[in-house]
Length: 175
Image (cartoon, rainbow, N blue to C red; front, top):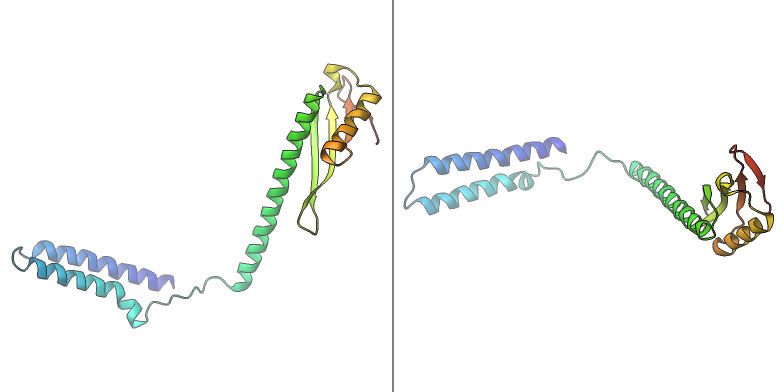
């Protein structure tokens, strides 16, 4: 297919160049209008001749139907992965904003998501690491209230850990 298109393009360009040269060389005057019509007809014939002769095959032979299906399947998977990543990023920002409004210093937030069989995206886990090195330890009742607040807002009980001044995990609350 590409060879026939290449040959057709070459013939159309050659006809355009030849017609332009003929128009420049031939004298102007009373035959000017006839010459323009003749050159336009010549160019149109060069443009349509491969289609009329059946030389130009308009079928695509490079892509098999099985390849199209596999390519669209990988494209669908990539699109789903990107949507899940964007959703997780959005939830992370919302959780961070929620924690900052509550006055809790955040060190790290990790949101895990998955797609269900109904093609909906669900939050699998919210893991939060609070920076207690700069603000001091957080009392257990305050952590429990924070867990409940996040569960009420996002629909899942988070896993909250805190760090001491050495950056190690101080403890983990279970809901």
